[in-house]
Image (cartoon, rainbow, N blue to C red):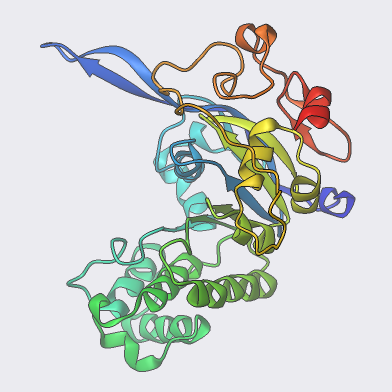
Length: 333
């Protein structure tokens, strides 16, 4: 972890919030807000892979889209390479848009079904460069080869490709402008296990070759452990825990993290393996519980958890957790 801290910071989030207004009545007045992301702060270091995990609806994808500017920040700061991005005009943001790209979850929905792959990839260079048509085509062919596709794929339509090949096209589009940060939003969840391994290997190769920094959003804890150097756990828009992958998987501190890790399927002959089962449903983000967001499902919650939101604590070696009862959790869970 100390080696990671020696690398320069490329992206910082300071108290980032993302709320969606709830409108109702004949006049469509705002009656409340869905609190998708709630005061998230973190630092992304150059060349690392930071995993973001949590149940569906916890705010992972919204956080990624907010970082890229696809969603406006409700409050807080997104600082990229020392500049506060949301304070810039659209013209001033253009260089930053080149430096931050996204690989989407559904490789088919992110492509125009009526547009050939070559034309789809060339759009990047039409918008952001002054290259001639022949130069753009050469760039696209080089990109296709870079991600393991062939030159004759240039003139094919999306339906002619498998899911893994479509995701390779999505990766080619993401790296076309030599970005610094790539947000991978469930980039392998729609793929078969064998294809997942191939795509993850490709992402690692590109990271090593181009010095890419990944924000890797996923619900697959096994994939995250293999791919990421650090992991952040989210629950109901809040950050529950942040640590190196080794620390998080061997010494989880938050009760929610422990419950998530206990749900990972493992081939084992041991019948008495401990499984932490969470009772109840995830609360409504439009009406989140007071105090700790997890207290309604937490097996060690107390009155303090219901009344006061836990502070973000450094437990040593850059292992952060938001929990009032870390010590109690170590004894009970």
